[in-house]
Image (tube, rainbow, N blue to C red; front, side, top):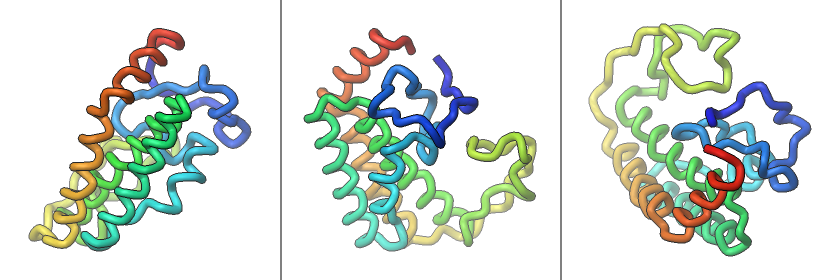
Length: 163
């Protein structure tokens, strides 16, 4: 099932109601799903390779803790934060200041990723520090998404609640 952006994210505890969670595509919902957003976001940083390494290792530790607790939603959210560490660091590596598209996000598309009809701004020369930070997050993201216990719990979640 696709990610449902119409849910009441401010008043839904997805730990108590995992049946309401949808994996979606990529990073969908990463900054919406509570209590996981509040638990993971404070540790998400990618300013330098050193900061990215510390951040990705901490988030991966949370990922493992969620898996151990059989909390697939938490594990998937940690996986999304690792993915977002990679994609945001790559964005900053390619676009000075991190602005990828021309103009504001349309009001009805806030919180959703994508160009939404906006033109992509030209790329700047690659920032090697941000590129290195992205590589660090990419390794942890790959480790998370391929982790056998994550794969098992995801399949069980999708069987129980639908794709």
